[in-house]
Image (cartoon, rainbow, N blue to C red; front, side, top):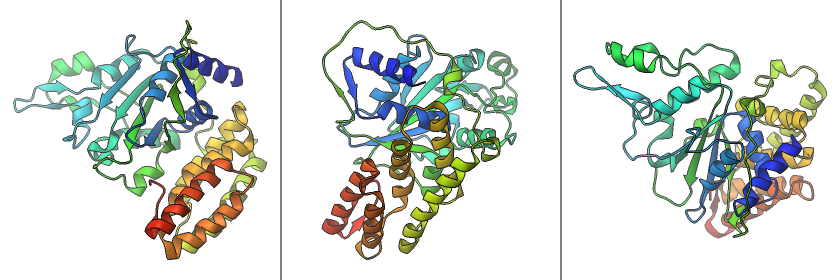
Length: 347
């Protein structure tokens, strides 16, 4: 898998782009651990670049229908804007991603990437509710039914025959982009707990101008599938799990001083991400844990200077010399706290 990561990065470089340290590996592990990832950054950062380049590197493009990028509309209120709805006469009107989902259903051996640009122009927890529920049900072994069940078409038998029921798709990967400085709906904490989120800057992926001919590495969906979906599946990793939980407990003792903590959902996501890294070997253990502390733990560290600063100082001491990405993010949050008497992860 390390070799595959190098081939993906070489393809991206041939398109004239350079990715920051371990960005591709972090993105890959996030998708493997949970097939819903958010990329966040300021409005001057092109957040759709990484999803498109990564998909292209593994053979998924807009031209072959395996990569689709949509800008979220302001009036999306529920999944009917994505899947479709019944008009006043009971006729089914297909949604903007229905054909994409059908192609993914008919081609289960290849990964399909859906990029939702400007995710929070509408309330994501509303229009993505069914998708998130299906993803979670599949990961916990529960049967949540179909993504688009037959009942969705009402009495329109022609639509049911044409489109058919769409089950949970194991080859569907969703990437949302989140501009931090735009006026839009905030994402609630429960939503954030159910996804992986990467914060990007212009330095993380930028255009070098050095293009070269390159062929994508045609990969099937197996390279994004993991046998580790639940902790019950992680037999043989007991010592690693115990070590990771020890780190999380130490961090929780610090977070609780600011009335914050890492709950079971985040804990499980961190463990699965780190075990998938051990399984694939794409990052050093400390680098993978650095990403998890940055993306999953620091998101909890927020509040006024009175409550947040002591917590951030202890987190800084814990990460010093071991976890450089987390250390850098903590320093930024502490500076915000000094200047504005308040801090949060999304600043």
